[in-house]
Length: 267
Image (cartoon, rainbow, N blue to C red; front, side):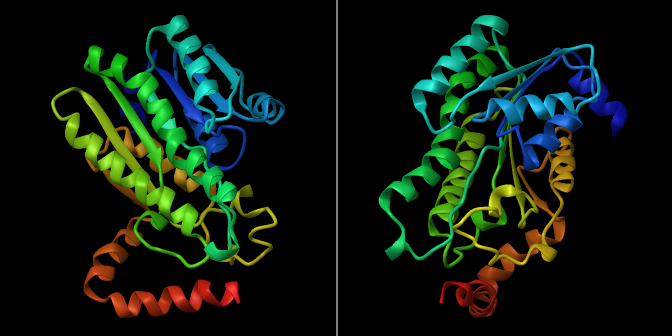
């Protein structure tokens, strides 16, 4: 596997959004182990982004940190144009940036819902659109979207987040079918909850049981594995994927489980 990835990533240009912390930072660290041409790291907080770069071992390829709010279409276009002018294309796009809020829809403002949707869903679309044409022209490229198991389950208190991930999954599945025979590959990574700063805000307020969650390193390894996998959607851990057909066969049981795990935190 390592040999295959080494050959596959040699002299490649990789872009990661949300790279300053959590899953994105782990993905950046893992990709930095290979002989890339360039590693482009995107985040809103340039100081934290630079901190994550310092923590990497010295490499003989370029690491390019860029400050960008992925929810801002204008900023994404400026960054995308800069990258295309500099390199002409990218080889691997990892749409990882994401945020979440916890609370009932009735008590969540439109602005809060828009913030989640524009970051998680439209941010992915903005970056995909910027680089898709160049991938198709070259008959080569890989777009990896970091979704969630919540892309398949409606969780009370997380309607905005689940909606954005449902949308990401649907968009990715449609795009994958459009891109058959183009040489451009689409992968969706769907982990269960992950121990990151995602939950460290006033919306969650320590209501999420972190002990059942994955380390971000586990998700990062799944991203690397997707490079050589023929699977469109990769669940992390793999056994979590069984819950999707189970939901279709036994919806009442799934409703009971979700109700007991999440609904109580709303009341």
